[in-house]
Structure formats: C-alpha cells, structure tokens
Image (cartoon, rainbow, N blue to C red; front, side):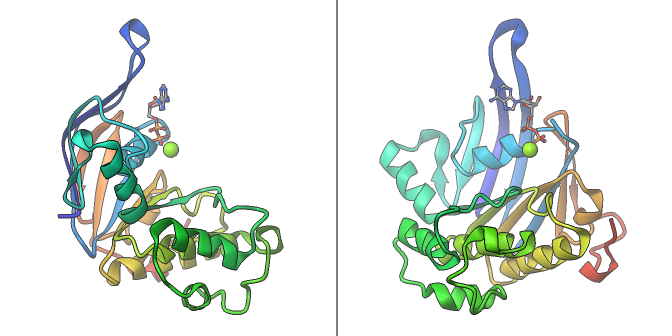
Length: 232
Ligand code: ADP
Ligand code: MG
C-alpha cells in the first residue's frame, strides 16, 4: 500500500472560528492505481493532497505513505520523503518562469538526486525538441506537460495532482489526463483531485468528499470509461 490514511482529521484554527477541513478520512491507494478524489470547492481536496505530501500535518489520525508514518517522522525523514516519494502537479503549472523547459525538468532530477536524462523525459511527454523554450513560449497544455515531466524526472512513486486540467481547454485537458493515467500504468500511484465529475469516470477508483468526509469510495458509477467518452 503506497498511501494509507486512517481516521484523519484536520482542523484549522481554534474555538468558534475552527474549520474542520477533513473528518475521519480513510484512504488506501496502491501502486498502479489511478484514483480521482471528487468534491466541490471547499470539500477538503487540497488539504487531503497536502497532508499526503507532507506539506501540511493532520490534527489527528494515521498518515502512512510509502511505508513512512508521516505524523511521527523526524525532520530528516520528512526531508527524504519529500525528495524521494511524492511529486506535485498544480492547476497553475507552477513552473520556474526564468528556467527553460529542460532546466525545469533538471530541477526535478536534482531535487530527487536522480540521474535521468531530461531530454528523454521531455520526449516521453510529447515535448521532444522543446527543451530550450521558456514556459511563456509554450501553450497551457505544453506547460502542464513540463510539470508532468518534472514530476517524472524525480522517479518518485506517487504523483499528487491538484485540479491538473483546471486551466486547460477540454481537448488539452483530456490529453493531460491520458498522460497521467499512463503513469499509473507504469506502476505509480496517481491521485487527481477535481470538482469535475466527468473526469472521475476514467478513474480506477473514485473517492468522493463532501464537507471533509469521504461519502463514497469505489469504481466509477457505470464502470471505468475510456477517455474518449468523456465530455465537459
Ligand atoms: P478544496 O481544495 O476542496 O476546495 P480545501 O482543502 O482548500 O478545499 O479547503 C477545505 C476547507 O478548509 C475550506 O473550508 C477552507 O476554507 C478551509 N481551509 C483550507 N486551508 C485553510 C487554512 N490554511 N486556514 C483556514 N482554513 C483553511
Ligand atoms: Mg483545492
């Protein structure tokens, strides 16, 4: 099991102003799984991703990721964990604007201490020959491919994607989702959070959040659909 959350609660603030962002969340994700976390704005999706990625800490509960109990880890263990276990993909791409495509990917390689070939990775996401471009010289879809290339460059087994198609048109969004699904096929665990129910139809498993609670967890209603059948 790559991701294991048991009875996870996250509260922000104290007293009357306290907000419960997650309540008693249970989540299990194994290698090769493409899981969509579905829920409306404010349902706790980003909080959940940040807790899995050790960018935020749970108020209570167990968070074990790739064998590491994050809630009990030392600073040194968390340092290794962030470098070697999880990679984030963001709605707004979050590339370094002053770095070329190749340099953005090299950042991922260096951060993880890997020895991957940046140009081979760019080629694998359909960006062969674009290593010398800067982010502003690329389309939104191409920029998100660089984000995926940077995540792949680390060799990390878990990809955490926060509304990865939120800024893309439908056609480009579908291509990015196919690319992410392919990474699960390669043995990674891919967690995509979205408010778009249509996207959840292509998942192996859909975990639905409502007001911080998991209200359902299972295969998509109607079965897993091919990406070509999605529309939004
Ligand atoms: P989503 O990603 O599904 O839109 P979030 O995880 O961002 O939801 O937020 C879940 C809830 O937690 C919301 O009510 C939000 O306002 C609250 N929240 C998120 N981050 C913080 C924070 N740093 N401080 C206080 N409240 C927060
Ligand atoms: Mg969010």
